[in-house]
Image 1: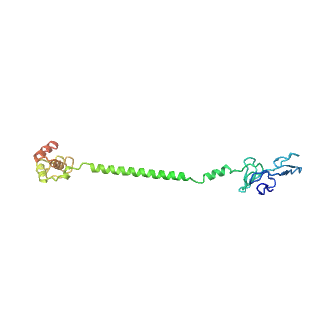
Image 2 (image 1 turned 90 degrees about the vertical axis):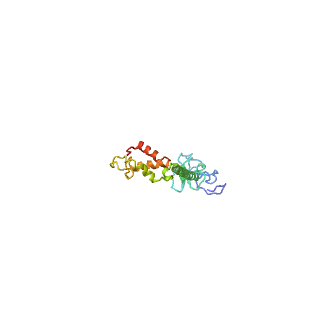
Length: 215
């Protein structure tokens, strides 16, 4: 049936145009008694028979009206039975919404990744700088800056025996043991004190007080 408003062809039993929704002046014949009923009738006013049989949707070719349940063609904008505007089913909208992440979400994730990377790099730079600062500020042994006369070291050492107790009390000037309180430790002590400006006699007294074993 052709719509007088927009000229679109509609199914024979359509009561409303599927494109513009205009009411179509149609009459529905009853299959049981043949009586012609108004186009909006569902049951025959003469015999009570149902005018529109149950419909089954063919998947992918029809769309169900949410108002009256009538199955319309896919390109139909208004239901041909009740004239209600046909909208997409919720499932279709849901699938469309779940098509993929939005640009805002992607931008947010990328921004967070860059922000985390920035703070990680900043932290690594801070700890590296702090470590370098500690190394540069650590005290340098005085003996490495002031050259000590080894003859003075021997002059002090010849007055003592090794205090480690494990090398048989060898003369400190010739002993080379590196045990606790041994020759190596005592000679380093002598060098440090000489570098600090103490005289040989003063270092002898200091060494005697700390290690003993004076000859």
